[in-house]
Amino acid sequence: GSVDSDVSNDSDESGNVSDEEMAEKLDLQREMKVKSMINHVDCNRISPVHMAAWTASSLALDWLLKKNASVNGPPDYKGRTPLHYASLNDKHGDCLQILINHDAELMAKDNHNFNPFHWAARTGQSHNIEQLIAKTSNVIYTPDSEGITSSKQFSPLHLAARYGHHSSVEQLESLVVDPDIMDENNCTPLWYACKYGHEEAAVCLINAGAAA
Image 1 (cartoon, helix red, strand yellow):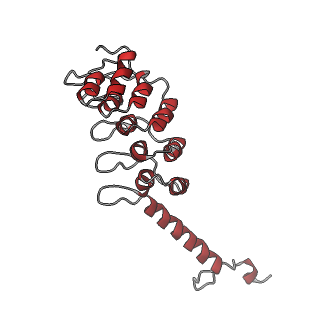
Image 2: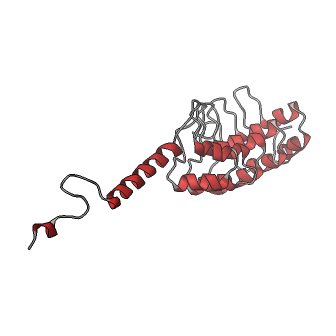
Image 3: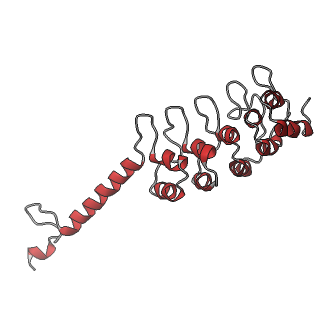
């Protein structure tokens, strides 16, 4: 038989690449470029996933994660993950749920030791708090709980009370051992609610057993 019949048609003896091999090579290059770009960060270490979460762009976020973009990091220059961004700004909770479904770290701490619960409480995102609670039903907030409170022992309940989000206060009350939990200045959530004139939040705390 002819020797030619035993030689692959994919490339000739001069090393020229076949159309099929070239197409495969180009596809691989495109895939590698997409992978590098979807995890690209700017000077503040903010990634496309961060931005999609911040702008509540659920379609973009879903596409990025399906392309294997990193769901948890690297964190930005303040130590925040995309889940922090979604907890803070995602009013409908779609992005938050997408991140949770892709195993985002629920108790990731930023440079202030705030986790996504803190940021949802800060802005009164009740729907986001509800979703986070559903995934962390056994979490109890105490001053010394690793990953729960900040370095100042400032709990999510303190934040919700400080900014007058009474609905968030009601949600978070069930996750504290004591509604009179104190920060490093010995201030309780009720103290903050009263200081900043948030009557509804104060009433919620008193009804939950906070010392008036």
